[in-house]
Length: 172
Length: 172
DNA sequence: TCTGAAATTTTACATCA
DNA sequence: TGATGTAAAATTTCAGA
Image (tube, rainbow over all chains, first blue to last red; front, side):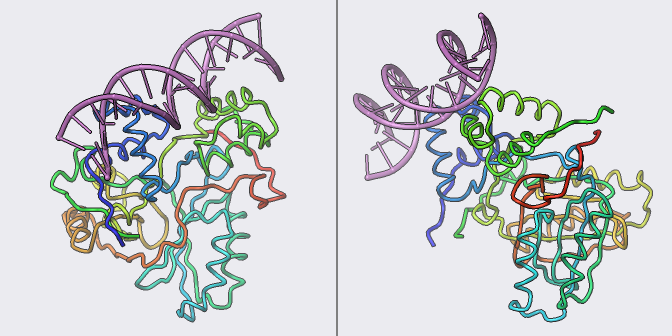
């Protein structure tokens, strides 16, 4: 429950790493006005704290034969958490499901799915939704354009936004 | 327009890199049964082709004081592409907007937004939506739980799924 | 594919606040 | 005590043959 204290150096480093985590520490060091070992120690700490949760290569879906992005909203019959455990497990196990949120409002789940084509998606949808007796209905929207994709977060003192923002990191 | 040909080695390498792109090439080499220089050549090629579009650190929103994820569906008045250029520009410029898709169906845009709290989100929403005269309505859903997040793609011969899938990469 | 050179990451240690 | 910077050691990446 201890509050994580991050300073401007940490935010600056995070801002660079979430754009390109292969930038040499030496270059990061010069950009944030610190020495390379200091940068190294901070990065390790941020990883240990879980602030940096992963280091990954971002792949281009179209070039990998997965040009179709589908957004699906799902409504359940029985909204009690226990009733949708099976559904969640299936979602977790299915690599085509990139993202899944449990949301308030009219629908219960929102999913982002990647597929090769409509035939592929239909097979996936029937496997994922149609077979589930606890699913009242699901609505598929085809993404005609990906205006913005990524997981980049808005950090306090990077990229000239949020100048007056002094919020603190908090507990898990 | 030339078709990109990727073989099982490429997929195996991509499968590893999209989990952890800091794994040494030497270790990748042993895992995919190739020599380290061969792995290096392939990674460079995949980057040049754009199959690997970025190498990034994934940050934990909650630990950075952004525990709120909001999914927003937006409906426009004038659906002609030209009419929403200003909206798109604002979305691109706003770091709180993580993702934005132009979709078919009832709503026109779907956004994934990260915020510190409801107050923050309301300020953002009024700046992003309320001020826009071309927006008919927007519906916000709070993500109570992030079941699955990430951009990991399902690759042909990795992680024991899609055994019978032999699709090919295609043009940009 | 293998070997050596260049670069980077990592450690050790002295210094400052 | 905790964090930083300098310098040296260990890996890793990269370019030859």
